[in-house]
Image 1 (cartoon, rainbow, N blue to C red):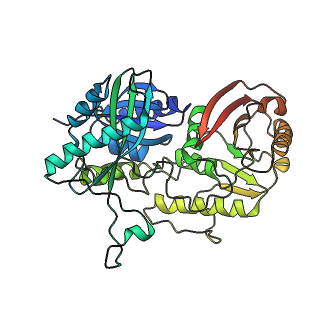
Image 2: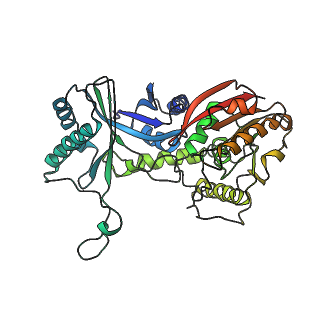
Image 3: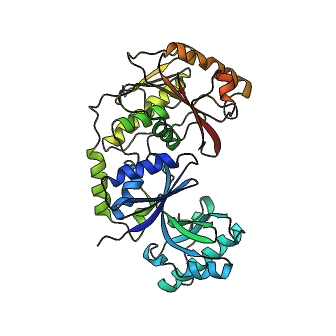
Length: 414
């Protein structure tokens, strides 16, 4: 009998639908994976060990994958301590690993003091682990620079740490351990991000929510470091976003290297570069286009099972077939015979330049309708008044975060 885990995916607020749909597609290949509920920036699901690896490697719009180690009711701090101490931490956290309560969220609950919740959860979990492993205290994470040297001056080995997140909703406490390690937007292909880059997971959410499919052309007139176009290529050729990286799960007691390798090989076998995909973009900044081409080349390395080379690469050609051009938005034009999607992240006034310049750019974007007749337009920006400057009300608008920046995703039928 396979062990079934309670798990959760963290994602940008506004991307929950995209993540839920991705999980349901994974469940088509794994009958032990089942979506439970969609919450604010979080989707809960049940799955087996293979499903945990499938989620980590295969989800495009997810920020993190967490394992729920316990859920219980706690209306006071005594109940919080007892419930945390009763959780089977030793089934997940190995001896020699540290533990950190990274995040606490409390909503509509009697327990409101998040710093106190953090301290009590850490104390109770540490007490349980110390008792099981017969030690006085858990290892402390090694800080960088001076503190990572021992008395002899040698560099100390970093202590691996289990990161815990605590959610308290209507007095129900959920204790979750992060299985991701680095956030999942770190795919491995972007060593050069350019100025104010769009997060990979945000770009993937735009693609999934917009309804874009491989059969439609895609163009980005502000391509920057190429994130939207590269994520589209990954989707078109079925390149799993986590193939080129490692996860915190690998250091946990529930890790299974055979299952992990099997899942990785299953994802790698699905990559198909023979599929037709018409993906193009432009930017007026020469360096940005060079970075975009280099990022695309690194993704090709990952898809081929090679370690990606860092830095800007000038002689790799165009291995993914994405057509990058040095061109201002006002000169961008359609090179495809049929209509498709314009999907873009124009300059934000808060991130690049000034607000007035950004608003003029939004006005200038109205000319895209003439140069791309019949195309759909999808835009993400932090400016809630984008529609008034563009000159047309969007068919749909949803709030979606790009990292710490609250943003708006506008969709038009041009």
